[in-house]
Image (tube, rainbow, N blue to C red; front, side, top):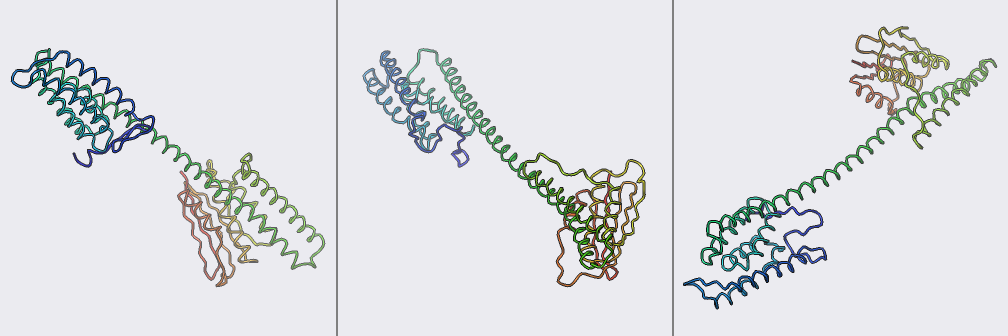
Length: 396
């Protein structure tokens, strides 16, 4: 028997070959008493007939032989749940060739091997059992003709082989179903975790894009008031009104995001469109930024789908925020050019280069991921003439 033959595939809750299991549910506690009863009945039936076999053993010899074989067979029965049940079954087959009283234990062993072991091993053990009973029939003639006896012998062992193989296949199917259920549960847990992570990333991007933009406008307006305290009262009042309005809008955005994080009962604001870009530009102009906008009034056709329009809006928003943060006072040019199947967005400022110790933020990184998920490209370049963000966002 090879190493591959010794593998077993018991279902959960059954006993594995490879060691006696002494738990209350062990099949051995049921199989052994049943085997004792069957063997005792067989011994009684054999001794009651007291057949004579000329030239081999007389009735007295059989009277001694059969009980000895019965005891030996019963002693081997626990070995069917040991580390080497195949060897035990072969030993029982040898005893069955000597006396019919070993037949119950030998057939039980054939079923046990067919249940736990590969088909090749089970077939070899079954053939050994058939041969052993054929030898028994040759020197201890049964009541049936020899041909019919051999036919019944083959049929019984084939049934044991089929029953054991079915039992093993059923156990394998049940194990596969349990494993599939465990994998499905694990996959469901991973999908839920990934969905939560994706939702958190989406909310983080929304906070950065919307809330960060509003706060940058507030900072720019407050800075203008701080450096121009001698401005006319009406301009100071207008700036204060912008700060109050911007703070209220930022607070509402924050409340909405907090409600979403808390219980998911609210949704994020409707996605922006290309038309909302004009509002971004107007807000930037209101805090003193010079912005030149190139945006057609009508895009033609049905226009880009919402994810593409939102991505274009975010590109303009991030470009204006970066210009306000890193190049205050610089003029900005915004160009949004919808074309057949794609949209081109450019945000360029003429501000000075960043200081050597400047650290880039995460806005452009998240923006590039958003654009690339749509199949587009985003390039951000710094030159002596200023900073430029170019994006190409396709759609089908």
